Image 1: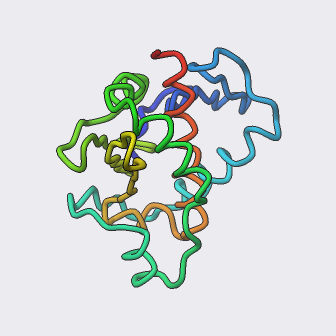
Image 2: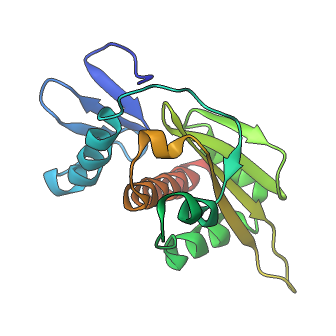
Amino acid sequence: MGFEDVDELHFLGFRLSLSNGEVFDEILNRKLEFKERLPLYFILHNYSLTSNDIGLSGKLITFMDLSKIIGPCPTLGREVLKNFESTFGYNLSLLFSAARFFKHEVLDLGDASIKIYSLPRVPIVLIVWGGDEEVSPSSNVMFDETIINYLPTVEIITRLTSITIRRLIDASRISR
């Protein structure tokens, strides 16, 4: 599913040992406690159940599009997007500095945007429009339309998106 055939998985600045299940946070330079690892195990377990690696289509969809395909979806927590916007909406270049910790591509959407490969076959596109004294920043999240082949429920997609945004914010603190 896109990971190298080695004894460790590397994704989102995490290093997961396949021999003992330990996860090391390469951004914050610490081992994760067991309860912190559980969401990662849950996401990776579901990703590993993918029966057919169909690649990526290059066509982007939104959470709204997902709801049309797989049914009603909870929205990404407003607090998560608010933190993303307040971190990067007034300092667009910080988004690119923080992204250097991840496999990513710079895109030409909004005022600043990146595609982060949260998992090898699951890119998440984060778009921000900058704010100023008169207008608050805003953002959007998009996915390759093939995401539902790799992550079967919107709950898993939402959880991975939240983790990705939190990791980017963690990386921004080191990038300042």
